Length: 433
Image 1: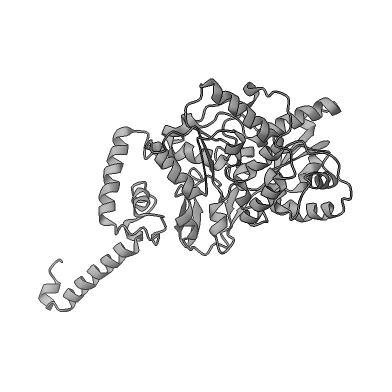
Image 2: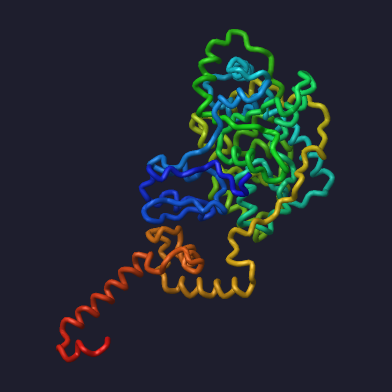
């Protein structure tokens, strides 16, 4: 498996070389070279922001085809609670779950059920006082990766528990194996995903050694087929096994609410998330116990693989919660089974060099180049800021005159010289300039 698997990809044929994605990428992972965007693999979070802003649909997310269900003897659907917000006037979750069964899944296991169990486990862990405060949620994989590459001082604050998606897959497959007698490798668990970051978290998880999820189907891909099945359901099967607290995880603030604590902060949208992390990095957040961060606007309902407007979806979920119990009763969870196998560690993708002396020299050169550049961060050079352009020059990936302002100055200077040459006498032209 590649160290940098990415679910966000670029279709170069469609790319027009505009700078929309360049300006919005939260980790400055995009460059425009030779009229086409390029994604720097080591910096990309797969947050999907470039998909959202590309007017030419040149960025796209990789997800699985439902044909992959044929690879297994028994298949399980893992619907994200966000899925429920895609349907108008939904009062009974069982219509969605029964529709999934009629699409060919053998079993449905709600991710919102595991969300409730994760919330309960988090509450008990926080009560022990053994977690550093404020605890940062680990549910959004794009945020976890952002912390990993940009905020090394905050890695120890991230909640060391698997996401509800991973927990649901493990519980569902173990249950299915006990019920059917099939080996685990013949049982396929597929997440119904709202965003590409979840796909990356399945293929290349951070925290667990490997994922129990076998694939991901985009909500936008499964939606029309599921809606057709749901419209034919007269009496749904009683499958639902979660309550309002678990479903609340789909939108920003839902996870914090499920913890039943007051001193929390919930922020959504990648720019807001970065602002909160920067404040936290400089200890400017006050007395908080828990911080919930979602890369997408509105939370998972804002994922680029959804179909409903995130505000509409959030309103639908709010109404749906009125028809659900606060939470279902689940057997006491085993916190040890949900803990990450690996601690979150800083990934040095922003580091200039492993050699400190060399890094310092490169830093000085970057500062020197920045003084030459206009400081407009216009993106015309193909880098998002003048500083990243200077870094690219120092790394040998760009030239100073890729900056249009520098190029214009050089052209003007050349024009002055030519003008001076024009007015010189033949004797003077034989002298070196």
